[in-house]
Amino acid sequence: MIRVWGRNNSVNVQKVMWTIAELGLAHERLDVGGAFGGIDQAYRERNPHGLIPVIDDEGTVVWESNAIVRYLSARWGQGTLWHADPAMRAQADQWMDWQQTTVQPLITPVFWGLIRTPPEQRDEAAIATATARLGQIFAMLDRHLENRPFIAGDTLSMGDIPLGALTYRYLNLPIERPDLPNLQRWYARLTDRAAFRKHVMIPLT
Ligand SMILES: N[C@@H](CCC(=O)N[C@@H](CS)C(=O)NCC(=O)O)C(=O)O
Image (cartoon, rainbow, N blue to C red; front, side, top):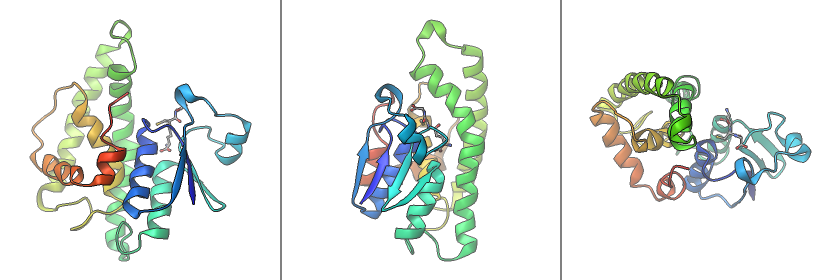
């Protein structure tokens, strides 16, 4: 049984829950973080970073959402989420790292500004700057998806999970976006998946 600590409206928890659901793993999720609190001494012993999510898989404790997605895929998703071929796996890896280092820092001010900040307190200039840059980087992802159904190969892999979770947010924020036809086709494929609908396609809060 895998135990997951983290509230379900966190995109980083959603990545983990989506992975678990794709793999059909027995699990229990505990609400921690945000209004739930619970980031106490005991929590920090599992995750010294003091953020959600963290998992415990029968004694194997892992934090950092993308590291968790990789661990679960390697352990339980050989031949599905985890590509055996290192070259294919590197494709998934590079887009996972790009999500963390490039997309996340830009979407955070837009998401927090529009969803978690009262209108009178918003930094509209910062939101507009990040939104414009997001349009450029999602256009780059759109070009990557021009000739392929999924991020790395012909089937869903771990490479789709972090970007898929963030793309749901990007497409559902009240912002202007460029035309992204390839990204929209890939996103439609994700929405066909029950695991994605259950864990990612929930109201933005
Ligand atoms: N790089 C970390 C970031 C984790 C993170 O920022 N988690 C946020 C929620 S998305 C958090 O713990 N916020 C404080 C809280 O919820 O109490 C990861 O991917 O796991």
